[in-house]
Length: 115
Image 1 (cartoon, helix red, strand yellow):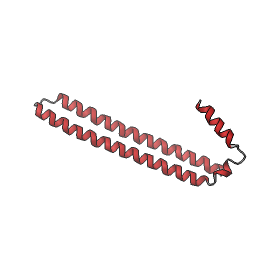
Image 2: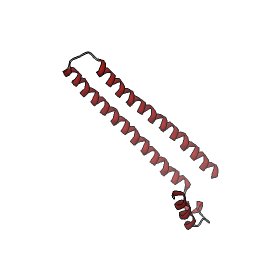
Image 3: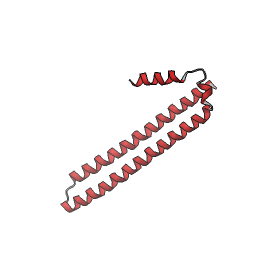
Image 4: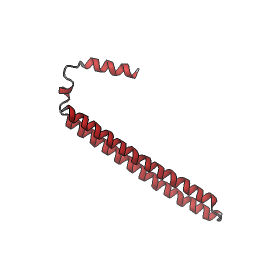
């Protein structure tokens, strides 16, 4: 049972590391798209009307990129919630785990940590 808990925590750390890596890649892509669009607009030799049209198009692209990033973040949050629920189900009865521990001690300890 103890080995299962440690194994579940190890797997959770690995999943979290993968999620963070995906988030970093998504953020990098979004930032790169914004910087590339801005540089392209600033250095393009064209009329004001064409530049405004390019700015509008770049704004749409940034919005789509932001939507995708938010969608990815929501998926990561859903995965985390599923993992927490699964972990809670795997643990089973929490009363067995905290048997012999006084509830007042837990409350006092957590309050002291916050202070």
